[in-house]
Length: 224
Image (cartoon, rainbow, N blue to C red; front, side):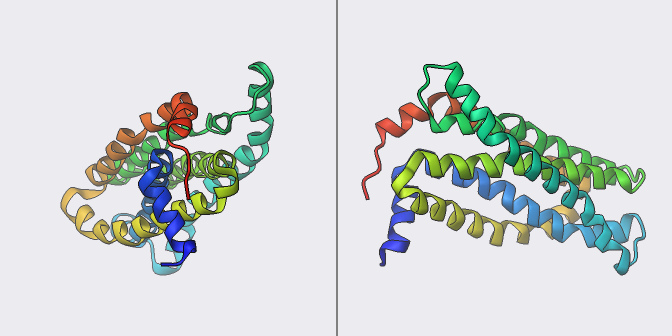
């Protein structure tokens, strides 16, 4: 096995931080594709959209992603530097993670909003707003984790990012396949609630890494 493949896999197996963050990012990444695959069927069946109009329903996610990219991309360095200056002046990669904390709550809120507004057959703009909220939370998780892995693993940043990419790609490939059966069994309301409850179960992970990430990294030094 080449080093390009062996190093990311070894990091996943030996670094709790890489494993936890990769699983979390993989989860919300897979949720994005699961929602994308559900849009056409849901908006056609519940709201009577034709195929040419269904494409417009993705605008909610597009707006949410765009806002998240601008806000978190702009504030990331600024907030991290403020935290370093407010402390003892020492830079810690964990200073990249504060947006992850509200993001872990925003994602379930967006899923609940999207699912139950569709289940209740309220105006079509409501599930679109819910998908936009979900997309905003998605970026609040994705971007801080990416920058955190780069800062935390330095010379091994490429391997850490590759481990993250490998995990989220695998989860993103297979989890959406369960979407049609899940929605046909549970409906939009409880189907998306199930996804939200799973996301809530992962929410404390952000606090754990933010508070104890420095100790975890020192207790598990990278040896590739």
